[in-house]
Image 1 (cartoon, one colour):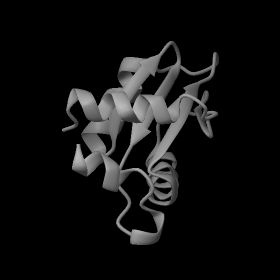
Image 2 (cartoon, helix red, strand yellow):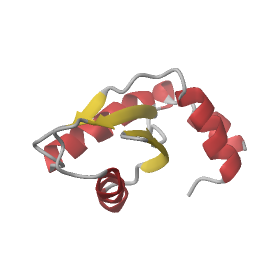
Image 3 (cartoon, helix red, strand yellow):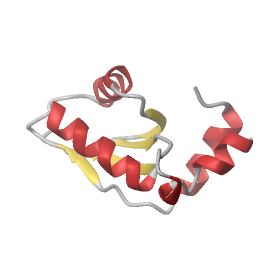
Image 4 (cartoon, one colour):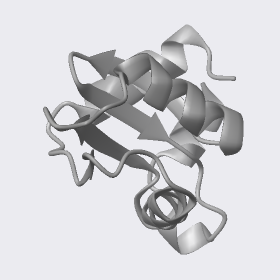
Length: 102
């Protein structure tokens, strides 16, 4: 679990990011979740958005991600979610060393 100070830092870092994943009419699947985990392994912090055609809500998406993975939802703004997961590879650790020191 992230503390408030850590979440504030991650929200500030995510401000300039563009969503790289989206949830559409196909909804939430295991394949989508595997791709999301792979992207977080490389980047640690990403944004995803829910398209207008999505049949799931933001709350459903947040619950699905947190229940089935170790990914943490840092923030939700409208139909956009900010996700964080520390990378296991030291070369990809951009935010996690700073977050751990907080």
